[in-house]
Length: 144
Ligand SMILES: CC(C)(COP(=O)(O)OP(=O)(O)OC[C@H]1O[C@@H](n2cnc3c(N)ncnc32)[C@H](O)[C@@H]1OP(=O)(O)O)[C@@H](O)C(=O)NCCC(=O)NCCS
Image 1 (cartoon, rainbow, N blue to C red):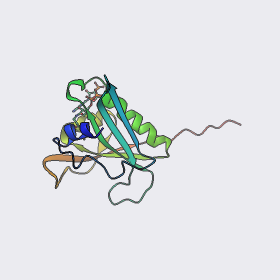
Image 2 (image 1 turned 90 degrees about the horizontal axis):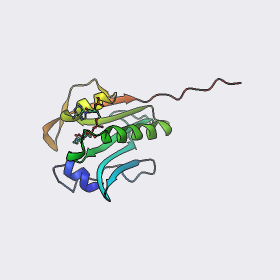
Image 3 (image 1 turned 180 degrees about the vertical axis):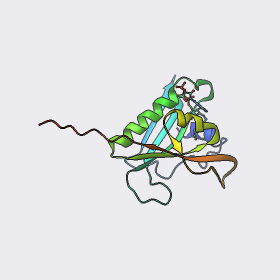
């Protein structure tokens, strides 16, 4: 997982490829293997939005597909499974910090951004968008 994160998302920098909540029990890490090699990854962890103290907010992180396997639906599948996990854990909102080039991907999956884009000190060359996805609430059965 970490090598693909580094290669695709961090310009090969290995030192920043571990995220704060990676080791939490509730965090879900997903990987797609091809010939015993990881070719796509995604992680979702319980993490409040900046400035929020809610416990039902989940952050999607490290979504990366090897370049030659993009466009086959792996990204969509991994994000969908991450959202299912957050929902099953009682999550109400999923969010991510999407780089400009991936904004359309997240919009296709139903995420939206409402705030202006911003830059990170570590990545002054890239514009990022905080994107949100409201997780569906389970329908309550009215039997009996
Ligand atoms: C963004 C990324 C994860 C998408 O993965 P993928 O497996 O190629 O995406 P999918 O094949 O599941 O595409 C799902 C849908 O999103 C669309 N899509 C995919 N990448 C897109 C992009 N960069 N911009 C706009 N739309 C995109 C696809 O056309 C598809 O739409 P459709 O179902 O209507 O045809 C992959 O391109 C990647 O790893 N990029 C580099 C790393 C990155 O930017 N990660 C996001 C971190 S912010």
